[in-house]
Length: 374
Image (cartoon, rainbow, N blue to C red; front, side, top):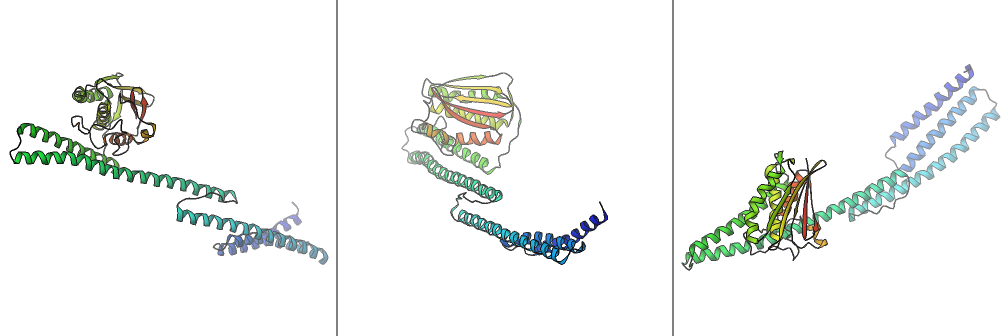
Protein backbone atom coordinates (compact mmCIF):
# COMPACT_ATOMS: atom_id res chain seq x y z
CA UNK A 1 0.00 0.00 0.00
CA UNK A 2 1.37 3.39 -1.05
CA UNK A 3 1.76 6.40 1.15
CA UNK A 4 -1.19 8.16 -0.55
CA UNK A 5 -3.46 5.19 0.03
CA UNK A 6 -2.52 5.07 3.69
CA UNK A 7 -3.35 8.76 4.01
CA UNK A 8 -6.73 8.24 2.31
CA UNK A 9 -7.62 5.30 4.58
CA UNK A 10 -6.63 7.13 7.75
CA UNK A 11 -8.43 10.33 6.72
CA UNK A 12 -11.62 8.47 5.79
CA UNK A 13 -11.51 6.41 8.99
CA UNK A 14 -11.02 9.49 11.14
CA UNK A 15 -13.86 11.51 9.64
CA UNK A 16 -16.30 8.64 9.11
CA UNK A 17 -15.47 7.17 12.51
CA UNK A 18 -15.99 10.50 14.25
CA UNK A 19 -19.38 11.03 12.60
CA UNK A 20 -20.31 7.39 13.37
CA UNK A 21 -19.46 7.76 17.07
CA UNK A 22 -21.40 11.01 17.32
CA UNK A 23 -24.39 9.52 15.50
CA UNK A 24 -24.26 6.41 17.67
CA UNK A 25 -24.36 8.54 20.81
CA UNK A 26 -27.34 10.47 19.48
CA UNK A 27 -29.19 7.26 18.56
CA UNK A 28 -28.46 5.81 22.02
CA UNK A 29 -29.68 8.99 23.68
CA UNK A 30 -32.94 8.78 21.71
CA UNK A 31 -33.33 5.01 22.02
CA UNK A 32 -36.76 5.37 23.64
CA UNK A 33 -38.14 7.28 20.67
CA UNK A 34 -40.28 5.74 17.94
CA UNK A 35 -38.68 3.07 15.81
CA UNK A 36 -39.41 5.34 12.85
CA UNK A 37 -36.96 7.98 14.10
CA UNK A 38 -34.43 5.44 15.27
CA UNK A 39 -34.34 4.02 11.74
CA UNK A 40 -33.90 7.51 10.31
CA UNK A 41 -31.14 8.19 12.82
CA UNK A 42 -29.24 5.05 11.88
CA UNK A 43 -29.58 5.78 8.17
CA UNK A 44 -28.58 9.43 8.63
CA UNK A 45 -25.49 8.44 10.61
CA UNK A 46 -24.45 6.00 7.90
CA UNK A 47 -24.98 8.56 5.12
CA UNK A 48 -23.22 11.37 6.97
CA UNK A 49 -20.29 9.08 7.74
CA UNK A 50 -19.93 8.32 4.01
CA UNK A 51 -20.27 12.00 3.09
CA UNK A 52 -17.77 13.10 5.70
CA UNK A 53 -15.21 10.52 4.59
CA UNK A 54 -15.73 11.37 0.92
CA UNK A 55 -15.48 15.13 1.36
CA UNK A 56 -12.46 14.89 3.65
CA UNK A 57 -10.67 12.59 1.23
CA UNK A 58 -11.56 14.78 -1.74
CA UNK A 59 -10.13 17.86 -0.04
CA UNK A 60 -6.99 15.95 0.89
CA UNK A 61 -6.54 14.97 -2.74
CA UNK A 62 -6.65 18.68 -3.74
CA UNK A 63 -9.47 18.23 -6.21
CA UNK A 64 -10.76 21.27 -8.05
CA UNK A 65 -13.66 23.21 -6.65
CA UNK A 66 -15.85 21.95 -9.51
CA UNK A 67 -15.03 18.28 -8.83
CA UNK A 68 -15.49 18.75 -5.11
CA UNK A 69 -18.89 20.36 -5.74
CA UNK A 70 -19.97 17.48 -7.95
CA UNK A 71 -18.92 14.91 -5.35
CA UNK A 72 -20.68 16.86 -2.60
CA UNK A 73 -23.87 17.18 -4.68
CA UNK A 74 -23.91 13.45 -5.49
CA UNK A 75 -23.38 12.56 -1.81
CA UNK A 76 -26.13 14.98 -0.73
CA UNK A 77 -28.68 13.59 -3.20
CA UNK A 78 -27.79 10.02 -2.29
CA UNK A 79 -28.11 10.93 1.39
CA UNK A 80 -31.56 12.45 0.90
CA UNK A 81 -32.74 9.35 -0.98
CA UNK A 82 -31.31 7.06 1.72
CA UNK A 83 -32.94 9.06 4.53
CA UNK A 84 -36.29 9.10 2.72
CA UNK A 85 -36.08 5.36 2.25
CA UNK A 86 -35.14 4.92 5.92
CA UNK A 87 -38.14 7.07 6.90
CA UNK A 88 -40.44 4.86 4.83
CA UNK A 89 -39.02 1.70 6.36
CA UNK A 90 -39.22 3.20 9.85
CA UNK A 91 -42.86 4.17 9.29
CA UNK A 92 -43.66 0.64 8.17
CA UNK A 93 -41.93 -0.79 11.25
CA UNK A 94 -43.85 1.57 13.48
CA UNK A 95 -47.12 0.57 11.83
CA UNK A 96 -46.38 -3.15 12.23
CA UNK A 97 -45.38 -2.54 15.83
CA UNK A 98 -48.64 -0.73 16.58
CA UNK A 99 -50.61 -3.55 14.99
CA UNK A 100 -48.81 -6.09 17.16
CA UNK A 101 -49.40 -3.89 20.22
CA UNK A 102 -53.13 -3.70 19.45
CA UNK A 103 -53.30 -7.48 19.06
CA UNK A 104 -51.50 -7.92 22.38
CA UNK A 105 -53.99 -5.54 24.02
CA UNK A 106 -56.93 -7.52 22.64
CA UNK A 107 -55.18 -10.66 23.85
CA UNK A 108 -55.09 -9.24 27.36
CA UNK A 109 -58.76 -8.23 27.20
CA UNK A 110 -60.26 -11.32 25.57
CA UNK A 111 -57.72 -14.01 26.36
CA UNK A 112 -57.47 -15.05 22.70
CA UNK A 113 -54.92 -14.01 20.10
CA UNK A 114 -55.29 -13.95 16.32
CA UNK A 115 -51.94 -14.24 14.55
CA UNK A 116 -52.33 -12.02 11.48
CA UNK A 117 -49.38 -9.64 11.92
CA UNK A 118 -47.31 -8.91 8.82
CA UNK A 119 -43.83 -7.45 8.77
CA UNK A 120 -40.34 -8.72 9.53
CA UNK A 121 -39.66 -12.30 10.56
CA UNK A 122 -39.07 -11.25 14.18
CA UNK A 123 -42.53 -9.67 14.40
CA UNK A 124 -44.11 -12.72 12.80
CA UNK A 125 -42.26 -15.01 15.25
CA UNK A 126 -43.40 -12.89 18.20
CA UNK A 127 -46.98 -12.95 16.94
CA UNK A 128 -46.83 -16.73 16.48
CA UNK A 129 -45.42 -17.17 19.98
CA UNK A 130 -48.27 -15.09 21.38
CA UNK A 131 -50.72 -17.28 19.51
CA UNK A 132 -49.16 -20.40 21.03
CA UNK A 133 -49.37 -18.75 24.45
CA UNK A 134 -53.04 -18.01 23.80
CA UNK A 135 -53.64 -21.67 22.92
CA UNK A 136 -51.85 -22.83 26.07
CA UNK A 137 -53.86 -20.43 28.21
CA UNK A 138 -57.08 -21.67 26.61
CA UNK A 139 -56.09 -25.24 27.38
CA UNK A 140 -55.23 -24.24 30.94
CA UNK A 141 -58.60 -22.54 31.37
CA UNK A 142 -60.35 -25.62 29.99
CA UNK A 143 -58.47 -27.84 32.45
CA UNK A 144 -59.31 -25.47 35.29
CA UNK A 145 -63.00 -25.51 34.37
CA UNK A 146 -62.95 -29.29 34.10
CA UNK A 147 -61.21 -29.55 37.47
CA UNK A 148 -63.73 -27.20 39.06
CA UNK A 149 -66.58 -29.22 37.57
CA UNK A 150 -64.94 -32.38 38.86
CA UNK A 151 -64.65 -30.87 42.33
CA UNK A 152 -68.31 -29.89 42.35
CA UNK A 153 -69.29 -33.38 41.24
CA UNK A 154 -67.03 -34.87 43.90
CA UNK A 155 -68.68 -32.81 46.64
CA UNK A 156 -72.10 -33.85 45.36
CA UNK A 157 -71.21 -37.53 45.12
CA UNK A 158 -69.40 -37.64 48.47
CA UNK A 159 -72.33 -35.89 50.12
CA UNK A 160 -74.68 -38.47 48.64
CA UNK A 161 -72.48 -41.40 49.64
CA UNK A 162 -72.09 -40.08 53.18
CA UNK A 163 -75.74 -39.17 53.60
CA UNK A 164 -76.97 -42.75 53.04
CA UNK A 165 -74.80 -44.49 55.68
CA UNK A 166 -75.27 -41.63 58.14
CA UNK A 167 -79.03 -41.88 57.77
CA UNK A 168 -78.78 -45.62 58.33
CA UNK A 169 -76.57 -45.17 61.38
CA UNK A 170 -79.00 -42.66 62.86
CA UNK A 171 -81.95 -44.97 62.31
CA UNK A 172 -80.14 -47.96 63.84
CA UNK A 173 -78.90 -45.87 66.78
CA UNK A 174 -82.40 -44.60 67.51
CA UNK A 175 -83.77 -48.14 67.28
CA UNK A 176 -81.17 -49.35 69.78
CA UNK A 177 -81.82 -46.42 72.12
CA UNK A 178 -85.59 -47.01 72.03
CA UNK A 179 -85.20 -50.76 72.54
CA UNK A 180 -86.90 -51.49 69.20
CA UNK A 181 -84.03 -53.53 67.75
CA UNK A 182 -85.04 -57.19 67.66
CA UNK A 183 -81.43 -58.28 66.96
CA UNK A 184 -78.94 -55.78 68.51
CA UNK A 185 -75.94 -57.84 67.43
CA UNK A 186 -76.96 -57.59 63.77
CA UNK A 187 -77.47 -53.84 64.17
CA UNK A 188 -74.01 -53.47 65.69
CA UNK A 189 -72.43 -55.43 62.83
CA UNK A 190 -74.22 -53.31 60.24
CA UNK A 191 -73.15 -50.11 62.01
CA UNK A 192 -69.56 -51.30 62.00
CA UNK A 193 -69.81 -52.02 58.26
CA UNK A 194 -71.14 -48.52 57.54
CA UNK A 195 -68.45 -46.91 59.70
CA UNK A 196 -65.74 -48.90 57.91
CA UNK A 197 -67.12 -47.75 54.57
CA UNK A 198 -67.00 -44.09 55.62
CA UNK A 199 -63.48 -44.54 57.01
CA UNK A 200 -62.33 -45.91 53.65
CA UNK A 201 -63.90 -42.96 51.91
CA UNK A 202 -62.21 -40.46 54.23
CA UNK A 203 -58.87 -42.26 53.77
CA UNK A 204 -59.27 -42.02 49.99
CA UNK A 205 -60.04 -38.31 50.23
CA UNK A 206 -56.97 -37.75 52.40
CA UNK A 207 -54.76 -39.72 50.01
CA UNK A 208 -56.10 -37.79 47.05
CA UNK A 209 -55.50 -34.46 48.77
CA UNK A 210 -51.87 -35.48 49.44
CA UNK A 211 -51.42 -36.40 45.78
CA UNK A 212 -52.92 -33.17 44.44
CA UNK A 213 -51.06 -30.97 46.92
CA UNK A 214 -47.74 -32.60 46.03
CA UNK A 215 -46.90 -33.65 49.59
CA UNK A 216 -47.07 -37.40 48.97
CA UNK A 217 -43.66 -38.84 49.83
CA UNK A 218 -42.42 -41.93 48.03
CA UNK A 219 -39.83 -44.38 49.36
CA UNK A 220 -38.70 -46.18 46.18
CA UNK A 221 -36.98 -49.53 46.45
CA UNK A 222 -36.57 -52.70 44.44
CA UNK A 223 -39.91 -54.52 44.53
CA UNK A 224 -40.80 -57.93 43.10
CA UNK A 225 -43.90 -57.25 41.03
CA UNK A 226 -45.08 -60.83 41.38
CA UNK A 227 -45.22 -60.52 45.18
CA UNK A 228 -47.24 -57.31 44.97
CA UNK A 229 -49.75 -58.88 42.57
CA UNK A 230 -50.03 -62.03 44.70
CA UNK A 231 -50.75 -60.00 47.84
CA UNK A 232 -53.34 -57.88 46.03
CA UNK A 233 -55.11 -60.96 44.66
CA UNK A 234 -55.11 -62.58 48.11
CA UNK A 235 -56.60 -59.43 49.64
CA UNK A 236 -59.33 -59.19 47.00
CA UNK A 237 -60.16 -62.89 46.89
CA UNK A 238 -62.90 -62.77 49.54
CA UNK A 239 -64.66 -59.89 47.77
CA UNK A 240 -64.39 -61.70 44.43
CA UNK A 241 -65.82 -64.90 45.92
CA UNK A 242 -68.73 -62.99 47.47
CA UNK A 243 -69.61 -61.60 44.04
CA UNK A 244 -68.96 -64.84 42.17
CA UNK A 245 -66.02 -63.38 40.24
CA UNK A 246 -62.98 -65.49 39.37
CA UNK A 247 -59.49 -64.01 39.70
CA UNK A 248 -56.57 -65.01 37.53
CA UNK A 249 -53.03 -63.80 37.14
CA UNK A 250 -49.91 -64.30 35.08
CA UNK A 251 -46.71 -62.54 36.10
CA UNK A 252 -43.32 -63.14 34.56
CA UNK A 253 -40.71 -64.44 36.97
CA UNK A 254 -38.12 -62.12 38.50
CA UNK A 255 -39.78 -58.93 37.31
CA UNK A 256 -38.41 -56.12 39.49
CA UNK A 257 -39.47 -52.49 39.58
CA UNK A 258 -38.19 -49.52 41.56
CA UNK A 259 -41.27 -48.18 43.31
CA UNK A 260 -42.80 -47.30 46.63
CA UNK A 261 -44.13 -50.66 47.93
CA UNK A 262 -47.19 -49.19 49.65
CA UNK A 263 -48.05 -47.00 46.68
CA UNK A 264 -47.64 -49.83 44.16
CA UNK A 265 -49.74 -52.12 46.32
CA UNK A 266 -52.44 -49.44 46.45
CA UNK A 267 -52.41 -49.16 42.65
CA UNK A 268 -52.84 -52.91 42.10
CA UNK A 269 -55.48 -53.25 44.83
CA UNK A 270 -57.53 -50.32 43.55
CA UNK A 271 -57.46 -51.64 39.99
CA UNK A 272 -58.48 -55.11 41.18
CA UNK A 273 -61.33 -53.82 43.34
CA UNK A 274 -62.55 -51.62 40.51
CA UNK A 275 -62.48 -54.59 38.11
CA UNK A 276 -64.30 -56.86 40.56
CA UNK A 277 -66.92 -54.21 41.29
CA UNK A 278 -67.83 -53.89 37.61
CA UNK A 279 -67.60 -57.55 36.62
CA UNK A 280 -70.83 -59.58 36.75
CA UNK A 281 -71.12 -62.92 38.53
CA UNK A 282 -69.29 -65.76 36.80
CA UNK A 283 -67.03 -63.17 35.16
CA UNK A 284 -63.24 -63.26 35.20
CA UNK A 285 -60.74 -60.61 36.26
CA UNK A 286 -57.22 -61.21 35.03
CA UNK A 287 -53.96 -59.58 36.11
CA UNK A 288 -50.79 -59.78 34.04
CA UNK A 289 -47.36 -58.23 34.46
CA UNK A 290 -44.23 -58.37 32.35
CA UNK A 291 -40.97 -56.62 31.73
CA UNK A 292 -40.81 -54.26 28.76
CA UNK A 293 -37.95 -52.13 27.43
CA UNK A 294 -37.08 -49.46 30.03
CA UNK A 295 -39.74 -50.55 32.48
CA UNK A 296 -42.54 -52.90 33.44
CA UNK A 297 -46.13 -53.26 32.30
CA UNK A 298 -49.08 -54.24 34.49
CA UNK A 299 -52.53 -54.96 33.03
CA UNK A 300 -55.87 -55.63 34.75
CA UNK A 301 -58.69 -56.88 32.51
CA UNK A 302 -62.32 -57.14 33.64
CA UNK A 303 -65.61 -58.30 32.10
CA UNK A 304 -67.63 -55.10 32.52
CA UNK A 305 -68.92 -55.13 28.95
CA UNK A 306 -66.89 -52.13 27.87
CA UNK A 307 -67.37 -48.38 28.05
CA UNK A 308 -68.62 -45.74 25.70
CA UNK A 309 -65.80 -44.04 23.85
CA UNK A 310 -66.83 -40.62 25.16
CA UNK A 311 -66.53 -41.89 28.75
CA UNK A 312 -62.97 -43.25 28.43
CA UNK A 313 -61.21 -39.84 28.85
CA UNK A 314 -63.07 -39.31 32.16
CA UNK A 315 -62.28 -42.64 33.77
CA UNK A 316 -59.51 -41.23 35.97
CA UNK A 317 -61.32 -37.98 36.85
CA UNK A 318 -61.90 -37.31 40.53
CA UNK A 319 -65.38 -38.40 41.52
CA UNK A 320 -66.30 -40.00 38.20
CA UNK A 321 -68.24 -43.21 38.77
CA UNK A 322 -68.90 -44.31 35.25
CA UNK A 323 -71.66 -44.50 32.73
CA UNK A 324 -74.92 -46.18 33.71
CA UNK A 325 -73.53 -49.52 32.55
CA UNK A 326 -70.56 -49.22 34.93
CA UNK A 327 -72.06 -47.36 37.88
CA UNK A 328 -71.35 -49.46 40.99
CA UNK A 329 -74.13 -50.86 43.10
CA UNK A 330 -74.44 -48.38 45.94
CA UNK A 331 -76.21 -50.95 48.05
CA UNK A 332 -73.12 -53.13 47.96
CA UNK A 333 -70.96 -52.15 50.91
CA UNK A 334 -68.83 -55.26 50.96
CA UNK A 335 -66.61 -54.38 48.05
CA UNK A 336 -65.60 -50.87 48.98
CA UNK A 337 -67.80 -48.93 46.58
CA UNK A 338 -66.93 -45.33 47.26
CA UNK A 339 -67.15 -41.91 45.68
CA UNK A 340 -65.19 -42.59 42.50
CA UNK A 341 -61.77 -41.87 44.02
CA UNK A 342 -59.96 -45.18 43.50
CA UNK A 343 -58.91 -44.68 39.89
CA UNK A 344 -58.00 -41.03 40.50
CA UNK A 345 -55.67 -42.25 43.26
CA UNK A 346 -54.22 -44.84 40.87
CA UNK A 347 -53.42 -42.15 38.31
CA UNK A 348 -51.87 -39.88 40.95
CA UNK A 349 -49.60 -42.60 42.35
CA UNK A 350 -48.55 -43.85 38.91
CA UNK A 351 -47.69 -40.34 37.70
CA UNK A 352 -45.77 -39.72 40.93
CA UNK A 353 -43.63 -42.69 39.85
CA UNK A 354 -43.16 -41.03 36.42
CA UNK A 355 -45.33 -43.73 34.89
CA UNK A 356 -48.47 -43.80 32.76
CA UNK A 357 -51.89 -45.40 33.14
CA UNK A 358 -54.54 -45.81 30.47
CA UNK A 359 -57.74 -47.75 29.78
CA UNK A 360 -59.11 -49.29 26.61
CA UNK A 361 -62.06 -51.48 25.71
CA UNK A 362 -60.92 -55.08 25.55
CA UNK A 363 -63.44 -57.84 24.92
CA UNK A 364 -65.30 -58.75 27.09
CA UNK A 365 -64.69 -55.62 29.15
CA UNK A 366 -62.00 -53.05 29.87
CA UNK A 367 -58.23 -53.27 30.15
CA UNK A 368 -56.31 -50.96 32.49
CA UNK A 369 -52.66 -50.71 31.56
CA UNK A 370 -49.96 -49.32 33.87
CA UNK A 371 -46.42 -48.64 32.66
CA UNK A 372 -43.69 -47.86 35.16
CA UNK A 373 -39.99 -47.16 34.63
CA UNK A 374 -37.77 -49.99 35.83
